[in-house]
Image (spheres, helix red, strand yellow):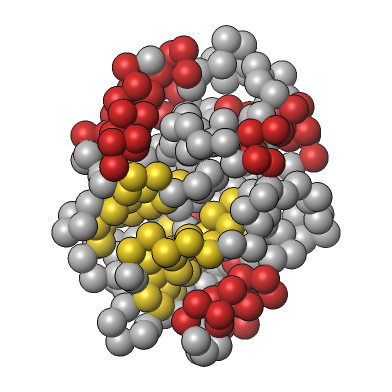
Length: 271
């Protein structure tokens, strides 16, 4: 995976968006990572972008935080290549722990590889291009830690993690009850991720998880229902522009109601 530079990008590449006064979304090519900054100016990185993105993430973090001191931790929503592309380099450089769900650990300790992307799945050009996407697991055994079973996040006071499988077995989303902010990972996204045009232009719509890498659609449906029931005010997703207010609520309601039509492909290996 380290040797694969994937030439996919979007009009949002390199942008940083303020979601709340403590939470920022940074777009790395076509995937979003988050900077959570506490009142004490300590910070946490959520997800770690595309392969070969360590320098870009460090530069963006320094710009937003105002210094280059390391984060307290890295939190992973899951271990797909576009969410852990820089995690090995960053975790070693910063010497910080990396937290993930217990069921995601085999893919982060070199024990297992993810299923290969399903290029046969119904979808647009990104789905067809997915054959070039890495599916190999990584080994960060020295840095990886299991998230606490009580749903707390050790370095993010007021936040909790929720198990939202389907896209991967140990996929999680992060939620803050106080301000109803959701970091959804790829449990759902705000762009039709299998469409090359919509990914490039970041056309905003609430959609299911990326089809070519989702292996359990029943679990994916239940995860979307769980997140809809939270009634979040704003959501940062792994792909697409952050969304909030009535647009988000209406989009999630429609996704839950019409999940079979909107999210699940008509054909594919895992349908």
